[in-house]
Length: 451
Image (cartoon, rainbow, N blue to C red):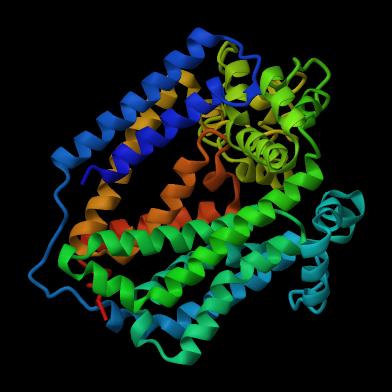
């Protein structure tokens, strides 16, 4: 029962240790407030989780829990069609292409694989912005159906042995298509999204079944698990390739300082840099990978340290999401950006060019003290979802696990789930589906087969 809580607290604690003692020399501001707030947030997550574990009573009925096979048989093709629509819309939005049918998919993929910087720079260019025209109704449909990608992966994992060859091939093709989209524009996020979804759905399914059947469950899905391992390896290798282009050499950290006019000097710790450059070879490459990975993960903490001493101008529950603030500015001409902590420290740490911890973005609405309540609620919700998945195999709960894992993993870096429309909409849809299934005792529960 305590696994998600322990893993979350250990992970966030280790990310703080990496920020403090890792390879990057961060010129931290407001140190006492920074460390006090972080200790408070971890404590409140624990309290929220413990409170949920003490009070949470999963709703049960006398009705027999449905088999996941029945669920998949009934809904596989409708979910597959929805997921296929989502990946096509998502591919066009990501690549800023002219059509929802990716006619240049193969050539774009090869280009992104060999020279990832080409697609990445084009996506950021004024030309791409000028040529791309969004479609609000299609984007709304995209958001409403985005949950289907998670549900499709759940169906593949829970019923892999019983699926026909056609369902396996078509299901896997749609499920991993975002990897292709990410490679086309030389960006890592879609690739890591697929890694998180497959890894945590498999892990959740393994953990929620009885101990005596886990080995049989794993053996029956060995091909899928090995395939997931390959995706993880590819994600790491491609991250190294893209970051070696964008962040060439150990001096990359210093380039962060040049992106804002009043930025302090950020650098790899001199002793480590000297050792790595003297050693050369694979040690230098390892140092480069480690330092850029550390920057990728922990740079949001630095932005937070700059923000803790600034007074709050609330954004009324809307400033925690870049998608929402941008939509308000674009469609209602309401600009909340100047009220955010990220914009207030823009001269020291770019509001758009750098990442800011999820804590900082939640603080836009409630202040850094109020984030403690957000972590209390997050701890409670994580426990409730985990308990629901563990005891009733609730489909919405199981599908929410990789989303919550992504949210927690990126807390040091940014508000990954709520900043993007696709994941924000998926979070809301799954949350509502979970509540409805509990309130009305709907058959959103499914027992997993081991063969």
